[in-house]
Amino acid sequence: MCTAFRTCKEEFTCNDDGYFTFSSTEQISAFVACFQKRVEDLVNEQRLSCGFIEQGNPSAPVLNRSLHVDYITKSLREVGCGYSGLDASRTWMCYWGLHSLNILGAPPSHFQKAEILAFLKTCQHPDGGFGGGPGQYAHLAPTYASVMALASLQMEDALSAIDLFVNIQSFYNYTYQSLSRFLHRMKQPDGSFTMHGGGEADIRGTYCALAVAALCGLLSDDLKNGVAEWIIRCQTYEGGFGGEPFAEAHGGYAYCGVASLVILDRYRLADSESFLHWLVKRQMRFEGGFQGRTNKLVDGCYSFWQAANFPLVDGEMAREGRLPTDGLFDARMLEEYILTCCQDESGGMRDKPGKSRDLYHTCYVLSGLAIAQMYSASREPDGIFGGSQNNVDSINPVFNLTTLSEQFAISFFSERSR
Figure 1 (tube, rainbow, N blue to C red):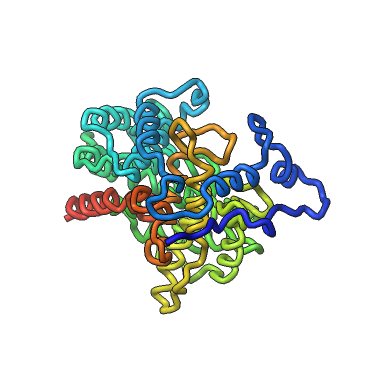
Figure 2 (cartoon, rainbow, N blue to C red):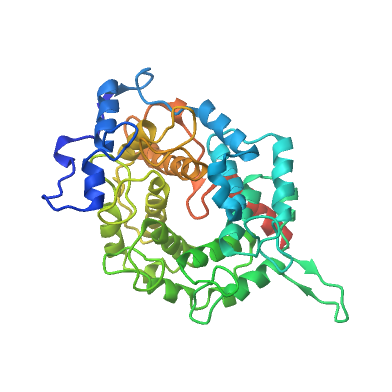
């Protein structure tokens, strides 16, 4: 069966009504320095080269799986000098790489898993939580990254390395939960979480704390009290969520807010209609990908940060008996954008044509592809765009772990708590 591209419709090209902004100039004019072409032109060229898409047609966009696996595997061992500014994000790089390999169905070797586990152990802080690298302060963001990386290893030894319980031999001879203690220290009286001791409080910290607690079986009533009410204060007049009350709605913060409410089973407190109105308008009608904020450019990473909200909201709507059968976004258009615009020719994923590949975009573009395929498989007559050769492993949108990794971790911590 042949189907046409849904992206690149002429009537949806950018129209700024003659009003200059930097974003509209980049969208319309030559913002891709190496090619001197706008993203709309590059997407359209790919569409024209493929014509009509047919299952098995060699001209159809293909997920360059082996190239991506090679790039990720090498990056987990060594990265270029461009990553020098990410010394405090080394645990994140472990998570981005491991999760990406799992999505591609190509987990690392046992030897490489052992190396990564040994490194992550050095990032655990004695007082609970993880830093971004060895010897660094505990911080909620790398704590989330470390725990999800350890879960992505799908090894009992890896999950056992998390200091949930630490025996303190002293005059009092007491035992405390190290990770739980750290999470509770970050909790603030108003229901927010600071990212680290004395640090800023925003919705990222809320999500990181709740996701870690939920996965590890540490989600106590004390940890949950007042959190949902603080999150609701972050919903803006546009309908999305900002990083803190009165901030601008943003894709990454929206995901953190919605996923946190789902973990707390309090999504019903949100203005769902207003949120969906904002969310559906973030999908770019020409390119097919998502922007992070109103009047901004398409970016591959929002293939996850925005699209992952749809299955989360779907789940809540299904519980209320009002799940839409057609889906709330065009997953096929997102697949088209990812496969035609986000794949680097040498492996790895990128923001948009002309941008460089990196582990961050590789992780979240592939995560977005998994979300889109989940939608397409059940709603599109042709199934997955490009055929089964492009199939990736399913993910749990609450934690952004593959289904296998999430189930392995939940089972492990459930058994451990008995």
